[in-house]
Image 1 (cartoon, helix red, strand yellow):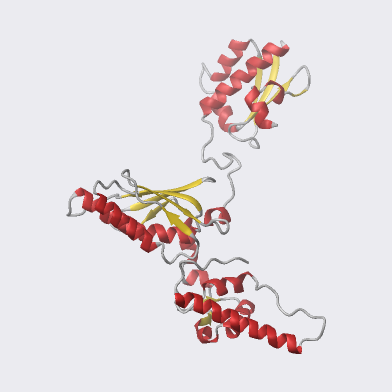
Image 2 (spheres, rainbow, N blue to C red):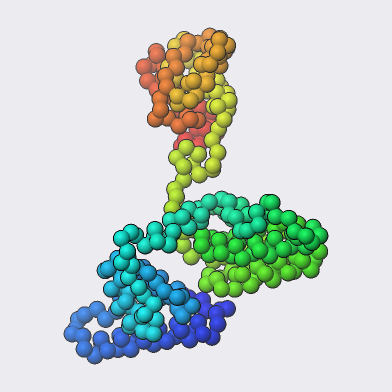
Length: 340
């Protein structure tokens, strides 16, 4: 396993070295006494590896509400970091430990696009497959200084929250931070230094460029595992992760084009179309409904049936004459490529 120690303090390196030396002494003792053949050492389970990587003198305590896990962690800490053993506690309360420390609420905050950080100011965090964007907004915050100094003050406050959110959400790859505009180079330098300081305790590797004249800071951060959003969510089956679906007018326009292609190619006079109930309601509203106009335009009788199993932007066409579904045959070329 590779582990980068660049940028770590002497105390952090010494702590890790001592843990490894203790572990090696345990292995040596087992080698002397264990029968042959036998397993001498195995990689620590997930929980123990988290304790190994994150549990140090700066952590006040670890609280566990599972007895088996508690015993496992106690045994591991006793072996590799005995002075920290009294910081491992078992939660004996009636409810789960997550309720005691409002962990689920913190997770919900970690999944929210909007993050408040005091004085009415907030961040908007957007995560895509290619890049993460963080937008700093002053909101209702009003300072007594001039505008540039006020913007710099909000931005410097934002740096601490941005660094916290990056670690909390485990954001990686390219990250673009859009700070509030600052016209003075000195203020941009102050915010850059504040951001650098806020990230100094991050265990993941990171690098960042100076803030541009437009208030943009570009940085990269080591991607170690799935982010919080990816771990707790999956792509929406309706929008396939885009966050958007076609408008009803767009679906109707696409449906009309499909009907025209069907009529021109087959010359048939009857057709059944199944669509999501929302589209069926929309297309049949009023005396001069979209459905009447499509039938009049194509001189084709259409029977419309609601199907809640279809997506809002999806429809299926069935030929009366051929007695089968013919949807794919009359899609546009671009949609045929997408379907295949």
